[in-house]
Amino acid sequence: MITIIDYFELPSEQQSDIIQQMEARSDLWGAIPFIINCLKKEGTPKVSPTDGGFHELLGPGRLFLLLDKNNTSDEFRLTAFTALVRNDEVDIFTEGRESWTPWVSCVFTYPEYRGHRLSEKLISHAEKYAVKEFNAEYTYISTDHIGLYEKYGYEFFTECQTVWGDNTRVLRKKLK
Image 1 (cartoon, helix red, strand yellow):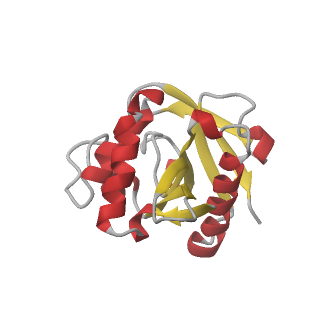
Image 2 (cartoon, rainbow, N blue to C red):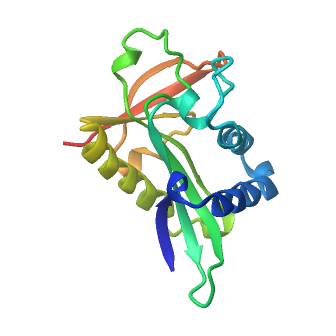
């Protein structure tokens, strides 16, 4: 059974299990070690623009997990995840940036689960949450991909610099 849950609503032992599952496959995507680091540092002060806990760096938000739960036990396997947060990797000093929120961030599906529109389910879940909890008119995505998020209704908005000094494409989607 596939279910979506917020990482921060899980008991600490399940949070630890999620982190272990991410660590075991952290070589699949460069952002996974960053996310792991943010989760491990949750509640610690932000030291730099790229170092700190999840909420300290990204602001209020959620980390939505898509879990495949075994019906005969309490075991679950992480299949995909995405975050919905106030801030993402776009440099906060970019003109107009303070109004670009919330961000659908860190969208990832493990390879063996791809092709089943799981990312679409997570993104849709995050967008509904954005309307309900943030009263958002738009959601934003920072990406280097072309064509991936456009199929979910996102449109090119602008190109700008990240906190790491790279350029990124910013897409947005009108929700209401």
